[in-house]
Image 1 (cartoon, rainbow, N blue to C red):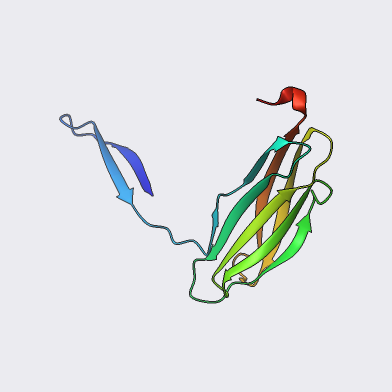
Image 2: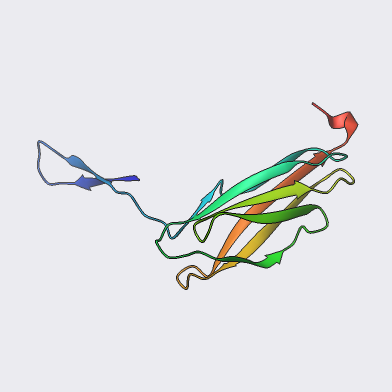
Length: 131
């Protein structure tokens, strides 16, 4: 990450000086991508995958807290590397066309970040809207 700041001086030769600070900020938990976007035919299943991994040496555990799209989308958490990385697979449930928004909230065992949220947008279209 790079942040820049302008400093205004009273020096007649250099009225403004720019300072840049470059840093790597280590996250407790990495989520990639930060959200899920499911887009496709309403009559078929559409899949999206999110990776979650620990940024710390200590073990990470995930557990469902709440999920508000259970009638439109299912999800499954796969532990890729024990206590280190997970893959969350979101799959649409075939049904009527429409646009839906929701969030999967997961509890963690990290007291500094007890919950993570993964926003979900789903747009399922009918045959006439097919592009």
